[in-house]
Figure: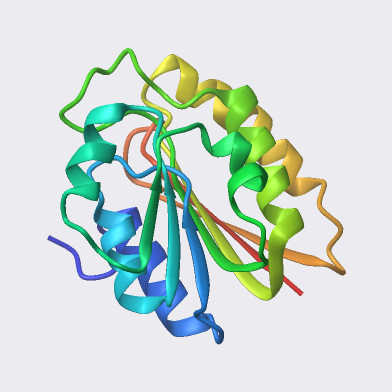
Amino acid sequence: MFNYVGDISTISHYIITKFLENKNVAIDGTLGNGHDTDFLKDNFKKVYSFEIQEEPCKSYINKNIKNVKVINDSHHLLKQYVKEPVDCIMYNLGFLPGGDKKVTTLHETSLESIKAGLEILNSGGIMTICLYRGHEEGREEEGCIIPYLKSLPKNKYGVMEHCFLNRSEVAPILLVVEKK
C-alpha cells in the first residue's frame, strides 16, 4: 500500500488537517458508513452529517456523539438545516460501500448542494469532493461538477484536482475547493 498515493478519503483528511485554520463547524454531505463524520467529529466543534438512507443515520445516531447532528435528508437541502457559516464541507459521492449500489448520489442534487455549500463556506474554508466515476451517475456528476468548479472565479476560489494517472480512467478523483 502507498503512503500518499492511496485512498483519496485519507488524502482529503490530510488536506483538511494540515491546511484548514479554523475548525469550528463542518458538514459531511454524505454520512454513509460514517468515516468522514468520525474524522470531522474529532477535529471540529460541531458537525452536521447528511444521509438520505435511514439505516446509516440510525446506526450513527446510536453512537450518541454530542457534537454530531445527523440529518436524514438530502445534502442539497443543507441550507434548511445549517443556519451558520461553516469551515469545511466534505462530499464522498457515489453509493454506500456495502449497501445498495442502485441508491446513489444524484448529479443534480450534488451540484445544487455544492453551490449552496460554497455560499455558506467561510473565508479560508475548504470543501473536498471525492468523485467515484465507476458507475453511470458518477460519470454524470463528473460531467457537471467539474465544469462548474472550473467556472468559479479564481480571485475567490482555488480549485485543485487530484487524480491517479496510472490507474483505470474511472478511478476516483479528489476535488478540493478553498475559499479566499
